[in-house]
Length: 143
Picture (tube, rainbow, N blue to C red):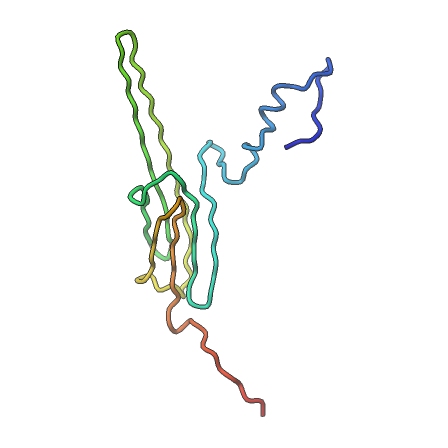
């Protein structure tokens, strides 16, 4: 948001400046074609990685999560159609929303035990580490 607006030659703010300087165009989650890419939080603990993907308005069945050659991909595709008919008109509306996010997994991830849950607009993936990678406490004696 700009605090100072440039005025045109007549002293009035430009309508186009407000349109093109809208904060919506400056968000990192907006791709160049107008498609949104959900924000992601990644947290690492000693035992696992937690990946949270913000994707409100979807159902758990809308998501596709797969792993191919150590690349985890989360994607969705949602199509909606609505048609209204009256005596003098027909109105048909449709929308299409999709996204895909990919993450390269480290070798330390136990891919067989990955868990995913969708709740309150957040897809949470838990990526446990392999047992041999989890650090164990050890005291080292000084000689």
